[in-house]
Image 1 (cartoon, helix red, strand yellow):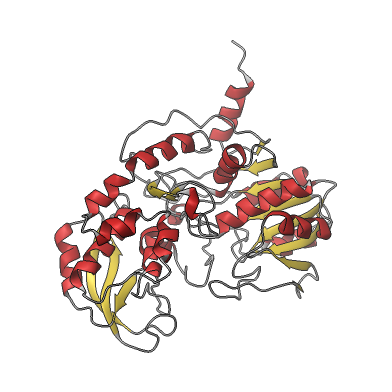
Image 2: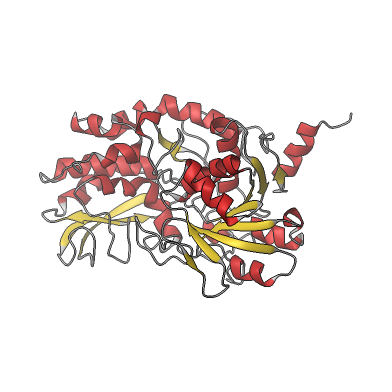
Amino acid sequence: MTPSRRDVLAAALATGAPHTGTTAGAPAGPRTGTTPEPHPTSPTSPTPTRTGFDRLAADGYTPLAGQSIGIVTNPTGVTQDVRHIVDVLHADPRVRLTAVFGPEHGFRGTAQAGGSEGRYDDPATGLPVYDTYTKSGQPLADIFTASAVDTVVFDIQDVGARFYTYIWTLYDCMEAAALAGKRFVVLDRPNPVTGRAAYGPVLDPAFATFVGRRPIAQAHGMTAAELARLFNAEFLGGKVRLTTVGMTGWRRTDFYDRTALPWVPPSPNMPTPDTALVYSGTCLFEGTNLSEGRGTTRPFELLGAEGIDGRWAAALGRLALPGVRFREAYFAPTFSKFAGRTIGGVQLHVHERELYDPVRTGIALLVTAKQAWSGFAWRSDHWIDKLTGSTLVRTMIDAGATTDEVVAAWQPGLEAFRTVRRKYLMYG
């Protein structure tokens, strides 16, 4: 029997082969499961992973031949030997790299949260660097047009959380590329916390911001290339001339330390893969008056405030949450909330990461913090609603709901997202 085009695409995606087109191919294989999604056991030995850029370079940059190229990237866009891909491409006569586009924190990564580097010429290459941060739609399309590139390439390490802004830079740049008539190429990198499952509430479109443009789960369990395929098909009407260059050697069960890839902090407060592991849950504390650990050496693993004592850690310990323990901790942030003051709280210690649910743990932390500390308060701008994607979490916790009750309330939306998500998965 002659295989169909769909069968060929499915086989190619299962091996991480490049996928070209504006519509999604078949998933790597059948995906089943109800709440929660299955947790396959990760292998114990590292599996060398070749990123999308590695595979593009090995192919002699053929997909970019004869085109003027602009690239959206940041310090995470590195090769196996930690050379920046902009420097590599600029030095290679087979590629005509003419522009760089910087996201939040900037192309070279010098800006803190909520900042960028602006427009400048890169001292190392002389290339013009355009600032994409906070830009979208036609204004961003105008930047692509002014740069005179034919193709926009995206290569940034994500961390797997809906409110991490690089995936919305991806979305905005895809939309702008379509408006400007530019081709768009995504070079894939691993989801550092695995692609095993999606967790958490799905965004209500009424709460769309740059920390959540479209209705996906709080922990999406996808790679950048998979998200690009989903964005194009589900939200952008297939209008993007999209090419995705997949990885080889990466499995959905792989945490970052299984890839043998170098870790470069994607942002100043994401120093290690351990940070990424907890981030999709503990970043919710940005929506409260507690410190989320910014200004410490363990951001998003240390949480606390003045007036909190050991009762919070004790309450969390009684919950026996899977895969994680909580230590009573005292620390003094050097900047951000409570800068220069010693505060009390907890440190998360994830000891069985295959069992750990970061979003459920984040809700348990919020519920117990409110119970254990009389000073607990949400940020006055209700930023928590933007992070969680609706009023559900805030209002349920205020009404005295338990962790299990809050988690149960978002399951219908999560199951619907999981069904959509399966169509765009590229790896087994």
